[in-house]
Image (cartoon, rainbow, N blue to C red):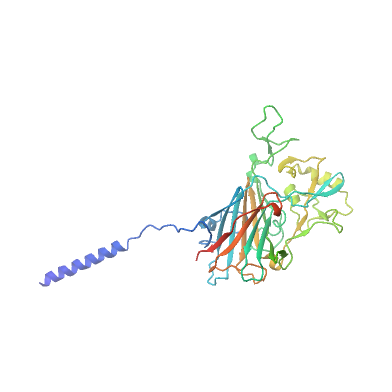
Length: 386
């Protein structure tokens, strides 16, 4: 009788052990699922993204994508946020990528110099704008504008704002055979279809190139149907003389056309009293291949055509104008834009992000066009994943 009880006891122990073992068997980890109709902001699982125009950061790999159709383009958005316990403390990072075959860096109103006279360009830069709904803040909308010529190139290359201003970084490793120039001669019969290096006088097209800009977004707000500037100094000033008939400054010795178009505070020379024709012949025509502002292709400098000087001088912003750190790169027809902003700036002209609340916004895309002709998305929703 005693031995039977022992046997029963042992059987119970074995059965319990087997049940426990089977019940605790690990199931395969399923990747999280997200509502793809939302821009889902996740806590970054690794280190935060560096705001440098490079989307290869591990944090972006984990972030779910939201594809937004805007006109004929698709803008892919991602978002991550810092894991602070307070729902209105921490930072938000945003990533936007889209295809754009033409690289537009000539802002509207840029100065054209031809036949010893100045005029203004009617062309426009590439830009993206985020417009946030701002309930219970006293303003109607918070507007973030990121333009290739107007706002980017105004800070150091580090992720933290401040420090010495630097020119854009140019990755020369992406060139064919380490050369800056490649072109197809379409003037011969039949037209060439292969790339030829080192052109002399023909039209040239960059085969592969990357440009990276670091700066800030231009922060404005809408109130009572009027767009107003946030408090503080903006990241640009107008490059014009007192009577606005000519630029105030020009770069004395630009390294190339992109360097020419990124005019930062302190690096220009006052135009007044200068022999512009001589300076251009000595320092500008030697740039070789430049970006043609007429048809958005890279061309050999035409000594008879107009030259271009940027209409904005870039600088480090202050106060509420310095809230949104931005960086962007254009590589072989693809724009990558990164943004970072604190959840709550404690300025009354800014949207407040809260991980407990969704936030509605729209996207405007400007492809070498004015803001009035921009294409706009429908209402999008930023949703925080806790």
